[in-house]
Image (tube, rainbow, N blue to C red):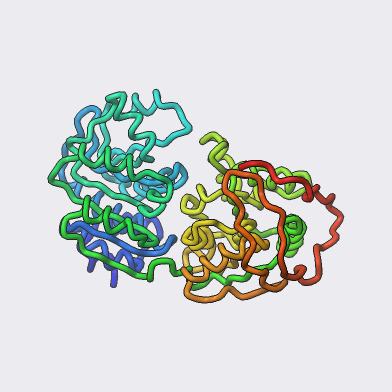
Length: 419
């Protein structure tokens, strides 16, 4: 099936060809025809499957045919995203799709000057991409109106629920035009999502191209059972096996990620970090360095799990397993993008066994063991936001031990700081 069979106009198909996009993905094939007909859509698909085009192309088509400009401080279409990185990524994609049209696209996120965003919204926008918190700030300052907003998209809706944005959504939605088209896209389907769909979508068509929680097919997964203190050495050993490849390393806490990044940097790796304590400019520079190859190792919290779309990420390391099992799927979805292969490596300490088992329940299968042996499952999991527990229980050392390269070893045996 080609794009012309989905109902898209020839000019838009030509624009996609200019961008090197010639064949729709499965989620686009299923969602675009319904969206073009004005239906509310609930789309379920794993990350990296082309969801932005699935909602963006119908929106651009609908708005580009109107021929009038938005009034000051108004927006015609609103796309809500849970993180700054994802919002910026969406806006970049929409600008590419909208090339050659008169449409104006704005993005508002936290971490940058709100005054500049207020000035931008004075002119109004055809499409506004926003994180919920910053949009609430702008609404409180009466810098933007939503009464003329006839299109609403909730992207990565499950992560918005995880991050507590349900209250912001309940405040934003009543401000939109009553007669509107709403689309919701998500990689997983938690129980609360049904409540969201019932509340904000009208007789939606449900399209699904992968069962909720399914990991990318081309990701090769493995787990090492290793003590908490042994993780830094094992990570360096793994990184030394592919020094020219890009690696994305995930941790659970902001302070832990920053500490790990500084250890790697001292040891001679080209490392950077992104997390909630970084300014937007710092996060943008880190991601740009990762894209252009000046940064080889990017250490991140889950804020980056759905905000990085870089086809060349060869390895994803779960240095710390996520306490929300669905986040594992989002993390490893940062590799094997655009049809490529990728590898996801997990490190499991004794107090993370319950996390691993929860992840395997979501995956509906066991992760292949690369080294060590499973720990006893009676060790309490680490407390979020508190001091980590000393690892205990069974298990085994990673095969072969840490490589003794010429790099200086970091001091990884100290007490763990609070999150």
